Amino acid sequence: TSLPPYVMVLFGATGDLAARKLFPGLYHLAVADRLPEEFRIIGSGRHSPGSDEEFRDQIRDGLRETVDDLDDDAARTLLERLSFQTSNADDGSELAQAVRAAEEQIAGDTGSDVDDVRRLVYLSVPPSAMDGMIAMLGREEITDRARLVVEKPFGLDLESSRHLDSSLKDVVDEAQVFRIDHFLGKEAVQNILALRFANGLFEPAWDRRSIASVQIDVPETLGMEGRGSFYESTGCLRDMVSTHLCQLLGFVALEDPGTLDEQALRDAKAALFQDLRPLDKEHVVFGQYAGYRDEDDVDADSDVETFVAIEAHVDNDRWRDVPFYLRTGKRLAETRRTITLRFRTPDSSLFDGEPGPNELVLELTDDPKITVDLRAKRPGPDMALARAEMCLDLVDALAAGGDDSHPLEAYERLLLDVLRDDQTLFTRADEVDRLWQVCQPLLDDRPEVQSYEPGSWGPQAALDLPEGGWRLGD
Ligand code: BG6
Image 1 (cartoon, rainbow, N blue to C red):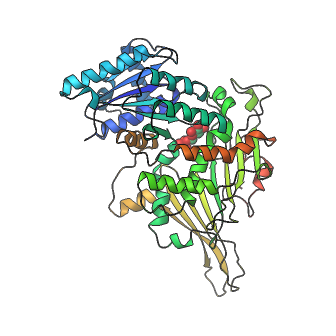
Image 2 (cartoon, rainbow, N blue to C red):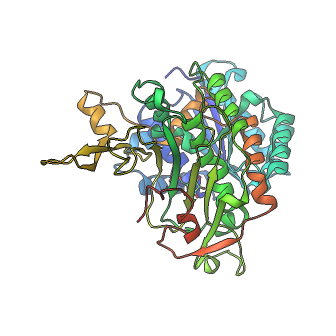
Image 3 (cartoon, rainbow, N blue to C red):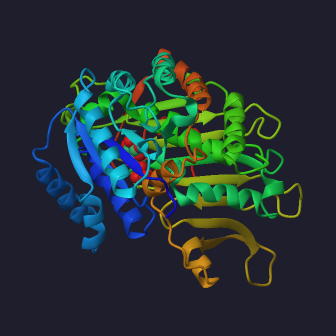
């Protein structure tokens, strides 16, 4: 690869995200030969996992669990370059030394200048710890030549997110900040742009004249999985809605950015978020699954929401009066990531709009599917109609056309983008600020939390939210 040399510092290196996504992502990049020629990875955190050797063993074991058919050579490429250095918000001096030592090693090995080595600092730490860590990085000058990758949620409300932003601006420029929302790394999400702007079939129909409503539906069967204490301080609105679901809405609804460069795309998304109406409690349902309060690390009287359903509106010429229904929650009946565009019925009296409208359904899984729900004549002597589904498995369809390129997992793609300094798929400060403005009314005046049964589709009130019902469910 032609990437410059890097020293990467991973805070939270012994945590869940690192084990499930970051190390497997780096490993896959190593297999695909997409990592820089020269790099070092320094794991960091408050508690030492033991010697470097023990840390490497722990990461190797993690890789064996998450990666099928682990390639030992590629794993070695990664593990050989891995070490651990404790640090905390008060003391980062040893970490700073370790970073400089790694840079000098690289410079010595390659005969290049220490200043040519870039730094990637991955902050997978809870919101409460974020400001302190950022200040430490600045104090220790670890921020020099660094790209800072910041995990969501970006603050816990408008005020704390502005505080976080000013902590960041104290030590780095916006061009160095990569706010990661891994949904944007999903192939299927980027494909929304391709589908919309490269297809004459869809682009002209992508507005209020043709579309009656939009559903962004991300139910999950998963429960807490040991994340009770994280969830208690976060909740579903912050964990999923103000980030992932709103970003999906942004991709579905933005105006043509003109070009795909990082500024244009993010300008278009930020402009759309300006038109997104602040959420109104009257059109929101919060739910909590029965049994949540018995989960580990969850308060016995908790009223944290594990489910949110929302009717949102975009007040611009393209979308005025088109409701956007958003739904997501834990312990629901299915795990899906679905965007449904419900079309208006044609203005013709031939069929009286029967049997219901067309829908275009995008399944944003790792195996993306597109379904178009059509109306067709039923065979036989009479002119009677029925629904007919046209379902396309995109990977198969592209393979049938001779394309054998491999998808990148979301974190893998986004890590690569940080290394190649491309911010297109990362969230900009103005987007974050506006999305908190949109969500803040629900934090100031929380909707009452309604109980729902695990394995259901959420509280009854949410089922009734969209006119014509949800695409998914019974
Ligand atoms: C994470 C949330 O950001 O996204 C989780 O914190 C959620 O609560 C997850 O389960 C869903 O991501 P994916 O990639 O599995 O759809």
